[in-house]
Length: 88
Image 1 (cartoon, rainbow, N blue to C red):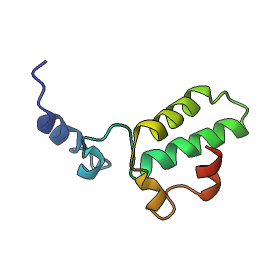
Image 2 (image 1 turned 180 degrees about the vertical axis):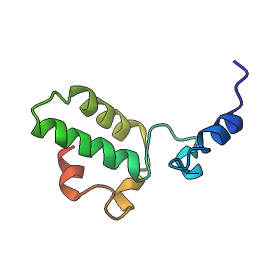
Image 3 (image 1 turned 60 degrees about the vertical axis):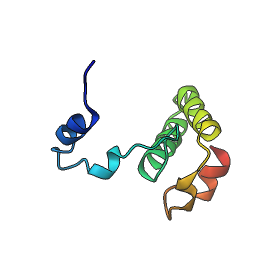
């Protein structure tokens, strides 16, 4: 497609709400750090409380736990709670 990652990154980060660090990529598959795991688990909790099916979100979380070797969010204060880590 001829798309250059650095050019897209520059355009996306022109939005002041999106920081450069949100677009850092690594060779490891899956997602980590603080925000996305926290937000996914919060969304799952909200869905469950509202009696909305969480099958897709459950599958995404389980797959990420399986393919991502480093669960860095577990070491970040307030990223996820112990209850969420165990029940997710």
